[in-house]
Amino acid sequence: MTNTVQPIKIAILAMGGEGGGVLADWIVDMGEANGYVAQTTSVPGVAQRTGATIYYVELYPDTQAHADGGRPVLALMPLPGDVDVVLASELMEAGRAVQRGLVTKDRTTLIASTHRVFSIAEKSAMGDGRVDSQQLLAHTARAAKRFIRFDMAQAAEASGSVISAVLFGTLAGSGVLPFGRAQFEATIERGGVGVKPSLKAFGAAFDRAQDGDDGEPAKTAPAATPVLQPRHPAVRALVERVQRDFPLPAQDFLLEGVRRLIDYQDPAYAGLYLDRMAAVAKLPDDAHRLLRETARHLALWMSYEDTARVAALKTRATRFERVHGEAGVQPGQVLAIHEYMHPRLQEICETLPGGIGRWLMNSSQPRKLVERFTQHGRVIHTSSLRGYLMLRMVAACKRWRLSTIRYADENRRIEEWLQRIAATAQRNPALAVELAQCQRLVKGYSDTHERGLRNYDTVMRAFERAGAALAPATLRELRDAALADEHGHKLQAALAQHALA
Image 1 (cartoon, rainbow, N blue to C red):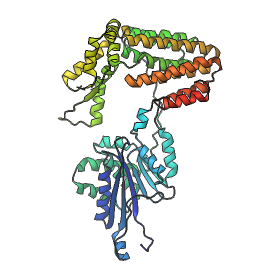
Image 2: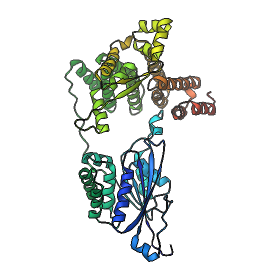
Image 3: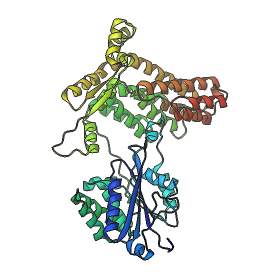
Image 4: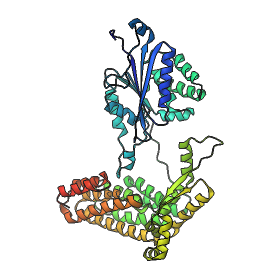
């Protein structure tokens, strides 16, 4: 082309099932219906949550094309620094657009949803692998000429539509394209599918973009902390004990720990938790940091995930409600939930009363029989009566949890951990805080638990070897290295670096 007229260049980054293709088709249809030559391409991605796809649209005025004396040559892919509008269906996709150079300060209008769908890497990290959303928002805001953002997934749900309609409405409201609202709405109507909810979502998003919504939440007064008034006498006694015997800065963690452990086992078990925390409360502590961190991590460790716990969580009414909501089940529809279960012999033995579990673990023929029936795993339909009752029976095994092999092992490790914390706090309270946080290494069940426990034992051996000479920052570095990869390679490198291998 010899003139200075350039196409309008639009990139759409969306995950599978979010209607990115529909959004691209709407933009193309609107352009062609209103005197523009339009072209769209898409490049599907893999291994990004449900598969992320980049859709690219270019629009060129038809009258200009005739004046040029031919058809315009339109690009197949967006080029860094050469995109007018970027639409992202999720915050991380907006970040990826910035990383690819598609968003520029002098040119690009970025429209993005602020909700997060965590990536596989974030979910599978042994520690907290989540990317900081606030940093991501700040980075993308600096990169764009204009940044329009709000929780579009929530807006779509409120309208009974999909996020593509919300993005389309926000695009219209931004005024960045040379089309009016009526032209956008006519495009949705021509599609003929889900017109009413799509127009509802479109309208709400249009108004929000017109209002100049920058995604900043309205400032509201902090809600008052509710006063707990449990009706059960044993529970009420535990709450009163926390409020009476422990300092206020630690009470939120302690009350949550009590709630969690009553749910996990019973009030007596929560009482054991408070007995242990009473001993920690007597230790030297700077601004109650040790008490708070130990309260949090002790509650997590005492509610370790065994087969009874997993079965209980999978059969809760709140879980069924959550799954129904996430699946968008409509009235009259039936949802089937299939759970893949693969319990190993060790986990089965750990669920049984101690004597029976040890007998089965050391037996010959009974052990082979159990391994034969469990080696391939099985699928349990928890949405069926039979499957639900099977898991409820497993969940009921918590009644003898405190007599199991697993409880004896976990209880021994907890006591050793608390003794180390107590001894360390006498000479170095800051190091004791880091030691309390080492519980983060022990989590999950099955292979995940084994790997975490192996790393925990390795770090504890290094701690014992170093003794009082170990700096808090060094222990924190070892812990972070253990959480960085499941195979322990980074931990071994950190141990070698500090001569603790």
